[in-house]
Image: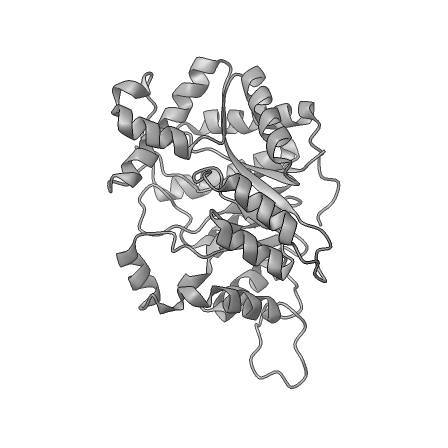
Length: 337
């Protein structure tokens, strides 16, 4: 019995605009809320014409305004791009606007290419300060001491829950050391999934906010009425991932009937490996594949993503996935954490 959530990159499909993407993210969030999804997270990426969620806190403010019960948050904010105080103020503001509903997932990667990372940070020297920056940021969410010179306003006293995100063993070790929940980016980088989950669980140290490990598994879902249509929907993300890895990022491509006719075998193999943690196909196939992932990795929560070109098809995919998880035995959340 596990909760299920959404990770949205606010994709910009070919033929659409950034405004379209952000409006549709709000529609997806409202749809997910009605279906019983637990959280709706958005991710920070920069200099990518196919992703509209660069100003993640601003996008989340919109999502919060069109929902009322689903938790909203970042999955995640790339903390080396920012001063911890700025993020505390942004998410403190969200917590004041949408009390009891805001999460903050933190990652160490730049979320972009190195040239853009320099434009964001002016320097790349602060990546090694990630653990200290996480601790500093968490402190800003605590009630301010009477003599505290620097406060997050808004932010102080909101106690926004913090999650560590990662795709390697580093994040697992840090989350375990700090006693924080850990979300693994297995939806695009599954290679270290099993090792990271094991290290996190084995070395976890209880904290004031979390007494036992809380592991979140990220998975792609491309659900449709038939296996063939599910594979067709998946082809947009396969093309987008291949374009990104070959230095040609752009809007989310239209789906194709035969992805093997578009990608050469070597590139296709790379994409298949990256997207290995996925459920693709009919309701029956998606249920079986999600059930297998849950049985194998034993997550405390599963967060689903899936960049699909057609918005109606994307809504339908998350509907089918929710129904599959209900059938498996995933719990509909009764109240926010």
